[in-house]
Amino acid sequence: MTNLQVIILAIVQGLTEFLPISSSGHLVLVPYFFDWQDQGLAFDVAVHFGSLLAVILFFRKDIAGLIRGGFQVLGGSVKTIESRLALGIALGTIPAALAGLLLMDWIEASLRSPKVIVATLSGYAVLMMLADRYGKREREISGVRISDAFLIGVAQALALIPGTSRSGVTITAGRLLGFERQDAARFSFLLAVPVILLATGYSLIGLLQQEAAVPWGQLAIGVAVSAIVAYLSIEFFMRFVSRIGLLPFAIYRLALAGIIVYVLA
Image (cartoon, rainbow, N blue to C red; front, top):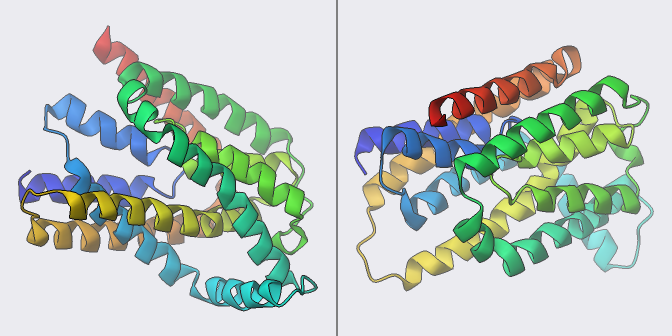
């Protein structure tokens, strides 16, 4: 890849990782329409690491609380909000981790196609609109139950399918469970941390086993660009989601699905 391609794809990753419009779908579509070669494992590691840095930096206070809560859970206490959230995040990570371990190779081989992306973009757009329109807005993140965390975690596992959107499907699940928009988004982003960490670590192991030379300069560009853009996209979303809701993102998903169908027709 050229440096320009790295920058463009890193911007795409940073913009779409935490907005409910599907980063995996865009990272499949952009090279497809521009006839670029597959970005490769090294690039995936770089941009996911950049996204991880962004979400950790933005939610650093929450993550520090989760770490304290984790130690409380290990000590046998689940009495505080922090400990309940830490336990919920841990349990909510299990479905996606298992699904990724068992199904990721099949998904990569069978589901990374524009047709699948059209179906997931449009299908989840409708579900997102319905959840945001009719879901109650009466619960806060402090009231997350273990069952809530697990259900949202199951929804997160569906995001392995390109075009779904990890943030989109987990925020939608949170809204269906009655959480305020901002609280659903906050829990979604915190739940993303261990999943992105596991995915980055798994990809890094594969990268280190490769014999090909690693383009460290391009990887550094990918990390930096994706981290900066992802941080800005998180800040934008958290600032405006309570006011604008999920409708604009659902409309974007439907429009993008329509464009893909038109181009492929």
